Length: 284
Image 1 (cartoon, one colour):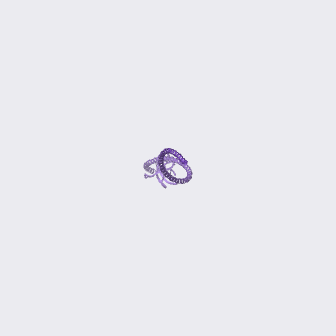
Image 2 (tube, rainbow, N blue to C red; image 1 turned 90 degrees about the horizontal axis):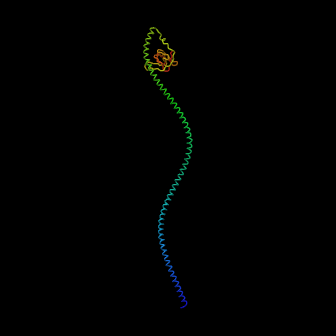
Image 3 (cartoon, rainbow, N blue to C red; image 1 turned 30 degrees about the vertical axis):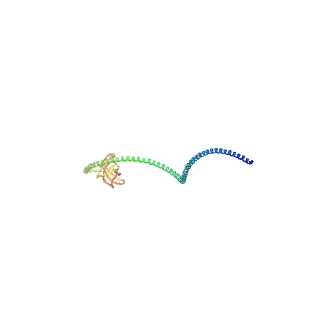
């Protein structure tokens, strides 16, 4: 064998030894790698399971987030719509506020005018209150005067009633006295004619003057009531001349006499009728 052959043999032996060592090393390393790979595979499987669980959870969360996104989009659209509506309302409110400010300015002016008017009205009310006070005072005075007048009227009514009763009594007495006087006058006329006596000179009456207070003709005979009576010296048979100013209205003959007045009949007519207020005198 040649040296080269021997070298190649040795070289092959060396290479074989190296290959065997390398193979053993590789086998050992492969076993270690296989154990490591199995461990890593187990870890990978566990990681895959965790990943799948996480992915499921993420997908569920993603679905929820998609729904939430849709809800948020809907809320956003609603908010945009509400924002637009609010902007429109705000614009309307601003326009209304501008109109209200104008109206408020006008109202302020009117309030100023109203304040001036109120001050004038207060002054007028004060004047009216003063007038009302004065009117109440005048009314109270008028009521007092009315009460006084009512009292006077009642007194006058009572006096008139008393005068009426007294007049009726006088008329009754006058009727009786006239009948008696007529009877006595007839007898007196017969006596005067028989003895030729002037009857005009028999009644020596005082110089008197008064007024006719009433004239009554309800019983067929005119009765004239005069405000002169016994206290004035008047007696039945006295005569009075009656006049009103320069108008002579006739002569009356006293029939009956009371304390302060007398009743007479008309013995001679003059111009016009005798009325209350006419003057009477015993001599012209």
